[in-house]
Image 1 (cartoon, rainbow, N blue to C red):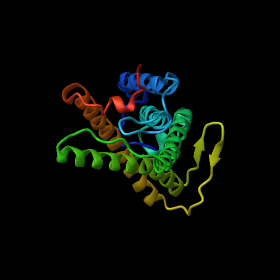
Image 2: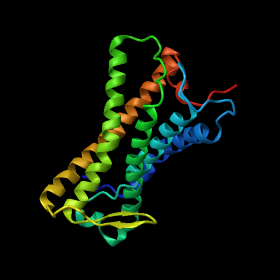
Image 3: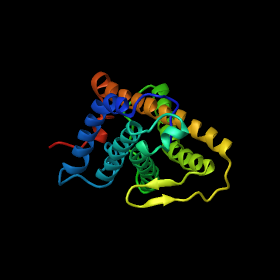
Image 4: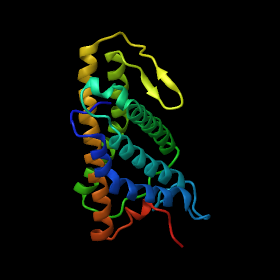
Length: 219
């Protein structure tokens, strides 16, 4: 939940503003402007409406959670001045974890679209990045929750309230896990950026259907 950097929250908000607006636009197109004839399921070449909604909503939540990270020391994170920001960050982070579990469950019911022709090294790199992203999407909220509980803090969700620590107090261990959470949170943003850059590379340089497969089909 708390990150190693001391930069103000509004600095992160400004730095993330352009990326978040682009991702929100893509999510809106994917969820709200899905053509009526678009199937909910994946096919050989495209992801279905449900998979696309999971993808873009996850992207929006990750960027928003990162932008709203309270930052600073434990005292700063749990200060009254940052209470709402912390609660929003924790709520968004837990939403990412739940959404990822639902997304993985949905994938078990769906075939993944076929990859376009590409060198084997690119295919393996893409698989590694996808696996790493899913691991991080689960590990980041998990380390936040466990770290907070071991430090003796509840996890607070907007409109729900506190979830008291069910674990025995181990403040030093909790601080270590919270630090790991910080690094994992930074890592997922960088890895997601690499993932997005790869999609743009496929679209503008390789001219294949990789990026289009995750966007609503236009008639």
